[in-house]
Image (cartoon, rainbow, N blue to C red; front, top):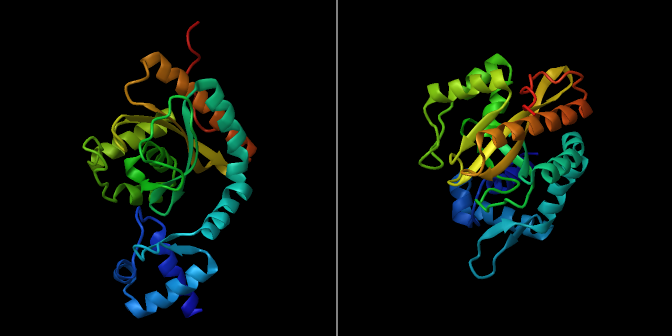
Length: 259
């Protein structure tokens, strides 16, 4: 069991890494001897979970890890409920649609469906971002239990871009506003040029389980278009939440647009 736990520690080094890792990198991250890391990496390569670049001798996640991971979105209840609704939302709005979930103290960008307004900002499915830094994370915090909400709000938020809000008091205000309105909007905070609106998703007993978001060029939406998109997001989030057993979506929708 100890050997298994050690092997998993090594494999999990790749969870948030944005680059290939060498034996020295992994040894520094885990505190293990390089000789021990080499043996573990050899076993992981043999299993197909990790692959090695023959030129650089560094390692990256292998195809078999992808196969294992893909089983999550195939069988997860939230993903099954959300995906068809997300496709409808993309078709009706033309905007890229995202599904995010809490992962430890971060928000995990789980599924993304790219619309015709897609801009490549470097954020893709599988990316994690500190919860207080993203619109998805902030709306998740807003509907957490009070003790957990307070704990997350006390975690420092790094500046991902020059426009990321990092002041804890300001983030707390954004989160409180998100709880009152049922949505969070941000622009240029996780990527310059990117705007995102996120709304919460709930399971039975009105427990927050994820966030549904629409991404768009930051300069793109007028006030009316933004309000229309929020209404569409709330309608889709209500549908997904009902599929998950949430009988009453606990967010007051914006009033209908004037005709």
